[in-house]
Image (cartoon, rainbow, N blue to C red; front, side):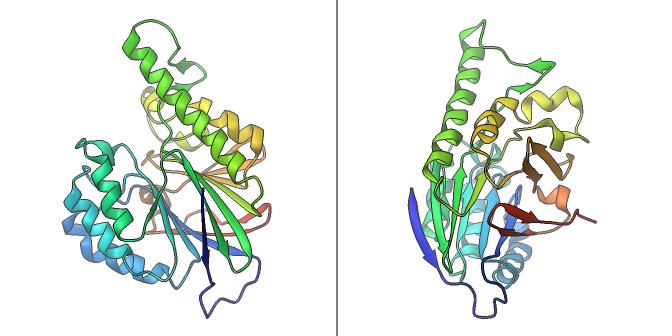
Length: 262
């Protein structure tokens, strides 16, 4: 767990409310360099913390990671991110993460971070999540060893969410940052036949137990913006869903202020 302190921007007009700029599936690449640079330059005037919900690159190439790194380097607000499936496609996810870390991005992998933003502690439990499906179409822990390895990988992600939420239990604001969906609520719009590969309801178990303030994920480009796990709001912040470079949430202790995308 990492504790980092950041003052609020000088023009901030709020006290205990923290502005979280979230985006998933940025898919950085050389052709999108200028748009990404401009979006990150703007967001530091609009938010106190940036959370990136995976698929930071198009195909997991280090050159694509460098595009995003250049946009993040030197920002006046912290950026916290996780990897997604696209970032692992080329088999060099560690290199992608290292390039972004060198630019100041706090890369979480089954880990947590705590930010002290003007006296308000914001805890982020971050991991990519994984596949497995939802009631009616779920992978079981049975059969061929390869399929059982998939099940075990999701179990490790579930355990990481629980551990991360335990680490940030003391924080005034607690956020779970994922790539894969922990509820089918935010998958509506995607073909039901692929829901098994877009997330898993097992990821929801520690969320239901520890009840963070909000869960953010991406991955489902044609999914829905808002869902819930019991009383916990879940938002699909893939840019394809929000229609924005970033969706800015205003969070106070145990509350989230948000309007649905137009």
